[in-house]
Amino acid sequence: MIDPIKLSQDLMRCPSVTPLEAGALDVLQKVLEPLGFVCRRVTFEGNNSPAVENMVATWTSPGGEHGPHFAFAGHVDVVPVGDAKAWKHNPFGAEIENGILYGRGASDMKTGICAFVAAAAELVQKGSPKGRISLLITCDEEGPSVNGTLPLMQLLDSEGVKFNACVVGEPCSYEKFGDMAKIGRRGSLHGYITVEGKQGHVAYPERADNPVPKLIKLLSVLEAHVIDEGMTDFQPSNLEIVTVDVGNPVMNVIPARATAKFNVRFNAQHSCASLSEHLRKVCDSAGVPYSIEFKEGAEPFLTKPGPLSVSLVKAVQEVTGEIPKLSTTGGTSDARFISRFCPVVEFGVLGTTAHQVDEHIAVEQIELLTRTYHRLLQNWFGEHV
Image (tube, rainbow, N blue to C red; front, side, top):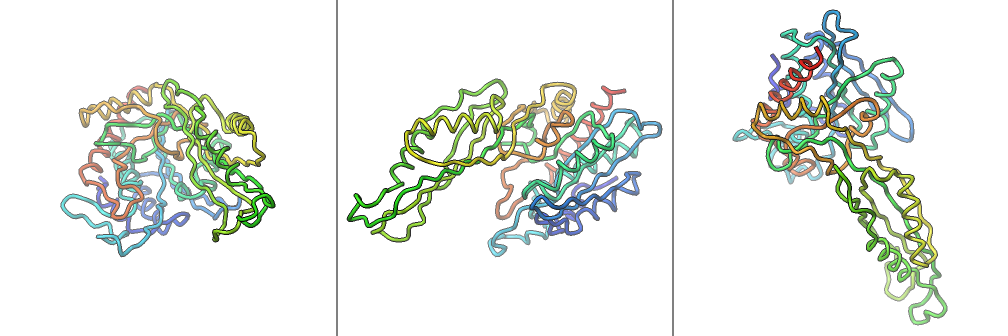
């Protein structure tokens, strides 16, 4: 059997800051191959993004080539540690103190990967599933997400590899372990507004054209606009202004240009294209000259309740007694890419300390997650006999 705690420590000691795998894939391959998993490493590069090495590990039962195919997915890359001196524990030391595992990736999401590796290992060693189990591992989720999960899924699809279901091990529990799972995510759209003016002396405003009041008016219209009231399974879309800048270091000059950036997290009533068009009309209503550019972050997706979510909820309840809320809140994840190919849900440990100094997770949660994933596999394959 694989010890998910020790494996978590081994994986967390690899300083795999995006896009580096830093030996993390080697750690996983070393434990998976003796269990009969066929490990394939694939590197994608280009698209104005760093090269990224990814791995697919697949176990197939005797005669199970055409049986049901279940996948787990996750990323071994982590965000930078920031000021290492601010950490109580070595960010890549994976130290355990009083039942708490400290280090980058403890929450997001190396422990999630180790839990599904251990759960899958236990199942295949007993030979109970009749079909295939694949583990999809990338090193690109915390970065641009260009050369990771999406091209990997596209490659497998082009080769005729199909999945019936996938669970992403993101840290989705909210206040206590097992209280939430993700069945979808909102979309993300970035907006970049520019208002041009004419630079001049503040004492002679008639000789200049101040763009700042115009930008303020435009942003006020955007801020006051209600995009929608929400929908079943999704909260209302929200627009947040994140920067305003004129690049003006002095007090006696009217600036020549004012800019602002905003982000919209939106529900499935919209797409990036339709929302962009809608927001252009909102900006037009302000009655000031402006230019705007949009950049797509992610499209929304939703996995309707079905065999996958039923198996997951049942597993969580059997292990913890909790009935997880099926939610679409929060940011984006690689599940948005997987949703194009098969039903996908996300479930993992608490995300309370993700990306923080002294990121940590209780060892007990890793053990609970492993048991939950194991029960999930039993439930799901049991329904697909």
